[in-house]
Length: 172
Image: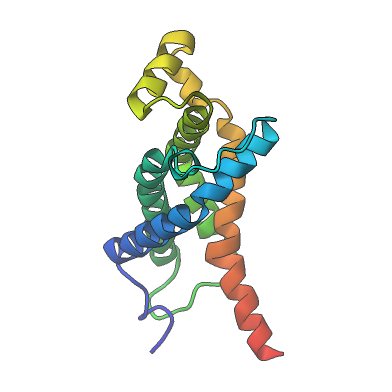
């Protein structure tokens, strides 16, 4: 079966991305909390609630973020590749990069809220309300360009370069 014929539908790609993203967040959330505390010079709180503070917003954001990335990548690959033809490595890289860009409007604000929650210990709603009241809603997009670059590079790596490198390693 050709690579083209084995491609998943948009819904399948989105589901795979969503589940994989949520599993990753649940495993890594404590390390994110520890990293943030160290970077900000705060003492590390080793209680489970403190280590998982912000998990709700992380899960609520990573599921659609990963779904957007996987589904966009799959749709772009289908749209830019002729039927029964495997996409070129350049096409894979372009599609993956654009997939990261597509998710930035959601990932940037979600990560800001999670980080603020870890600092202030407030709920999601209270944190969003505080940001909006003190700085305006547009503050949620702070760091958009940096997030877009990071997410595009991340998707290029895991959706395109990783599989390409794996294939090339098998030819050695």
